[in-house]
Structure formats: structure tokens, C-alpha cells
Length: 67
Image (cartoon, rainbow, N blue to C red; front, top):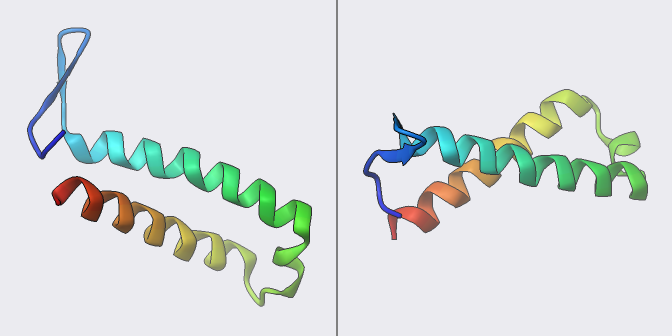
């Protein structure tokens, strides 16, 4: 994919916006698994934990695409 603009229905979109959406979708799945397992009960600040996981997932996606 690279870091060039993506044409979506005639609108050029920055590639980071697509990566943000992809990371958000992955985060939704991970959060459901964490809720099902009960992991968020043992975390001091669940919202901060979810934000940190989101940043990790987004960073991994950016690093994979940059390779």
C-alpha cells in the first residue's frame, strides 16, 4: 500500500486515516475479547488501558505498512 494517497470513490484520502480505521476495528475485537475474559476488571484505569492498546495496534499497523 505505501504512504501514497488512496482514491476512494474519487476522493483522495490520506493513508493514515485508513490505518486509524483499521486499528479501531482491531481494537473493537480486542476489547470484546477482553470484556469476555474479564481482563478490564483487573486494570486500574480501563479507558487508559484501551487507549494504550489502540496506540500499540496503530503503531504496529504503521510499521507493517512502512516495511
